[in-house]
Image: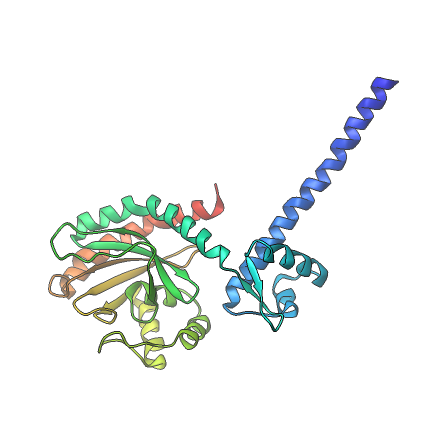
Length: 271
């Protein structure tokens, strides 16, 4: 009898533990849904709007938000709106750095084929952040610091990323971030930039013709998948002529992107 009672106790404990585990997983899933919803808005929002985006009860959202506020993953504004916290910045850099190391061999192939420096950038708030870079071997080559942020409107990777999103989303980012002139070639008119993004979508690549920095031409291709990423090749305009771009650089870049896209899918899915 005692053994039977103990066995029944163990079965009850096991049966009771499974719902608790499921509840824990469900809470994590809901917290991630809230973080992703806050990231998608790009601005602080109230709890009512957040509830519409994640389709969860207000008490549940309120409880999860205050759990996330403690360690700094979310912060509350004086107007009781919510936005992503600074704690996520360091985490995104770690994640981007790890992914960037994984993607370096693909960039090395682009550099070998094109003779120019190659990079990959990811959308980070209203900017593009470089997560991987392989420099060319010749003197005075273009070098990019991994982790650095650049404006979307004035760079090849930025325009490729903007073109990969719906036009309304791209317009909203442009309106928020503004169109700072970096060189005389920088596009500072929103309508002209949006028209250029239509061309990028049609052609499948974006160009930065000394728009962010004098003496540097960049061509970029968006990387399809769950993340907003773009791969680019940058070099001197005298070396990267239109013929070199079409015959050498773009084929190498597109071939690398075709190999990179499945790697990104696996990295995001965790498989």
